[in-house]
Image (cartoon, rainbow over all chains, first blue to last red; front, top):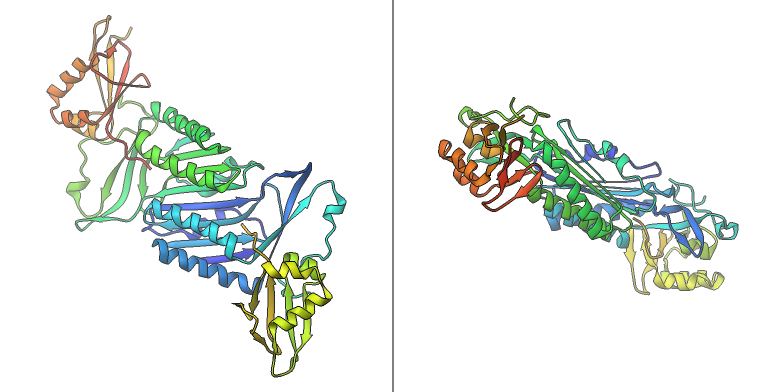
Length: 149
Length: 149
Length: 85
Length: 85
């Protein structure tokens, strides 16, 4: 069981080493990515993700424990990226290793649904071609800092 | 849409490049692995996978088309390894990219269930510490050859 | 010795307040959290609708109700609805 | 010119027959697949139970029924139940 918050790009290659376990015949991974979208003609170019760093790992860890108890899965790994993430790049990877595939699928789905509701992470759209929309009242705090100082 | 049969090890890193698509906000991957198992005290050390190479890609391609039509997913990639695969190593990776996660999860599950029933791939156990069980009447044909010559 | 409570505002709460953190003096015996937040809402009325849908975390635990006390050195985070993933 | 049909045996079918492939001569006008397979079963009785649960592929297409004809040059694969994944 491991969870991480990072401001660096996410790659599947980095996930593999967390899932080694000869008793797990099935691994299910979910990758959430920033999707190209338009809203009334405006195009999203990126999402800005922020988190409450003092609290997020505790919440993620709690989710992972729930998944392990509820579905009898053997390995859980969750990594969420924060900061600016461009369209096409991954924002979150959830991986579950289990003896059998049915539980791995269920646990992975459980984790992403719960993560969206119970883990303190927020996103804000970055729009292309609309300076007004790009204006922010307050810039988000720099990564790694808990307060603006 | 791509499907492959290989006798080389499978890694998640190799899958990533098949899934690039700014319209896909969700990717679900299923990795099937050879699981450590014992049967009446005998331990499985590996599985020998074989396939009908002249027919398997056609069947896999058909499955992928079904998944795309049925679930409106945007990218499908399936790679299955054949030959001897040791405990802990991956035998199959299925990846689905879709606009939304619900369809990606459903399509990935559909693909692995169908693959097990409709794709000409067979496995045979390799046992530890039981020479009798290890004896085979006929060795499988070498990979890449359609007939024993 | 600290004599204040630090209030942290995330996402839309931060936008409503115009700051990521505010320090508020409280007496050594503590103060009622609800009263503290009301005083912030008075200065930043745009925070009110956000606060209604937010979760409140005091020192790493969700708190609810109106009688929660905060003491000097406490950290209180305002969490608008999450949107990660 | 080929005058035979190639029969391919996979997995437990191969084990029952003791070979991955067998070539069978057929007349130029073809032969009934069922009869051809019966002649193999006569020589390899262990194939019979496997054949009952197998799918049969002729030149890349599943065939069923007893009246399928095969012609010289055809390739017929015997597929026991699949177990991939």
